[in-house]
Amino acid sequence: MAQAQKASIPNDLEPFWMPFTANRAFKARPRLIAGAKDMHYIATDGRRLIDGAAGLWCTNAGHNRDPIVAAIQKQAAELDYAPAFQFSHPKAFELAGRIAALAPGDLDHVFFCNSGSEAVDTALKVALAYHNVRGNASRVRLIGRERGYHGVGFGGIAVGGIVNNRKHFGALMAGVDHLSTTYNREKQAFAVGEPEWGAHLADELDRLVALHDASTIAAVIVEPLAASTGVLPAPKGYLERLRAICDKHGILLIFDEVITGFGRLGFAFAAERYGVVPDLITFAKGITSGSVPMGGVLVRKGIYDAFMKGPEHAVELFHGYTYSAHPLACAAGLATLDLYREESLFERARKLEPQWGEAAMSLKGLPNVLDIRTVGLTVGIDLASLPDAPGKRGYAAMDSAFHAHDLMIRAVGDTLALSPPLIVSEAQIGELFDKLGKVIKAVG
Ligand SMILES: Cc1ncc(COP(=O)(O)O)c(C=O)c1O
Image (tube, rainbow, N blue to C red; front, top):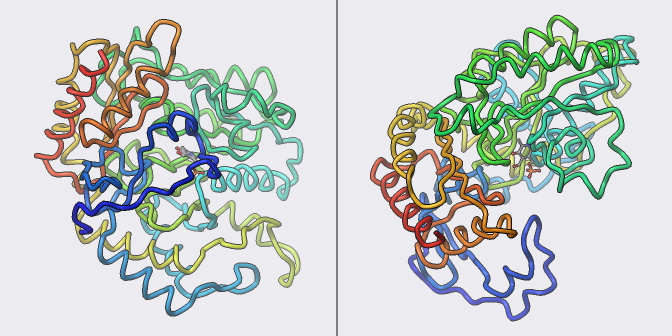
């Protein structure tokens, strides 16, 4: 590892407009990272920080793992790029097959893109086009959920349920409706695993069908765990009920597994944990353990087959990206899947879940802790907001974790979120929550 070496800080932080970042606060007191290995980041001042967030929910195999690094280096020297349209390269097919083999049911075709946002927009477009090619052109409505996060493309923000992500971009959002959030603190506070209360909220889909008519609805998209808006696990039975209602009305069910894919909930996909087979699954992040941007959509055989009609020389779906199935991403993805398998990392997450949940709940009773939710290797901790300053305590906690406690966490408003790499050891779970407890007290 690049041991505790200091790295230089750029003189001018101004030109980079940072994404989803409080730019002025960051530039006044930067949190800059220079290196990483396994469970740790190395800050530019040489400090080692334990990574409680898997970067941004993505480095599931840990950081800078040797086999992934070697695969990327080899690929870069061998084939930098192959055109994605009308040409390809062997690893794209190999990786698609490996991902399909991990997916449940007949989800056996993969469309590649470069991010979770692109995966969501791809899935929504495939759903709309699927109904169209089958002669159901009136099925154009999409249903999302309040507090859903589906990235930042126009499709994703339309079905997403976060007001700040939507309010300035309204014009293109017609034809979308939303289910209610499944989170209710009064009914679910301090739940370990899937809450008992809330399955009935899936029945709202029946209400939306009664309002709009099934013949106008193309698809429903939900995250099996709404992670980015504060770790909101699906209530017991909720996803099964959604599946049944979709089946009844011929509506496609999309699971957005950009975060839950590749082991976060102890299985290759959350669909397996819940025993529910959706029609499409979006993935990104964990497919390359964050090392090279990649996303994709798994679709059921019947969906793919519906497009494979007409003259053979003709393009079947007018959609794709220059960097779909980029050789570097495919090489990284194959090496990452090898690591997941060789180190049984999904099973490891499943085995560690009880200890993780118990350690998380040990923070109950600390100052300002309103709720703790945990499922798989994730936790969301709601802190009470400071009067008239929502988000300020959460920001202070994230900043204090980085600068004063050598800990990397994520804050969403006043909710602190953790999702460590799946290689986390039992001792490191203790260390993470010990540090987190100190952080919470520091901002109390
Ligand atoms: C469920 C879900 N969908 C989509 C996205 C968007 O992914 P990206 O930031 O790679 O575009 C995210 C990102 O966190 C996500 O959590």
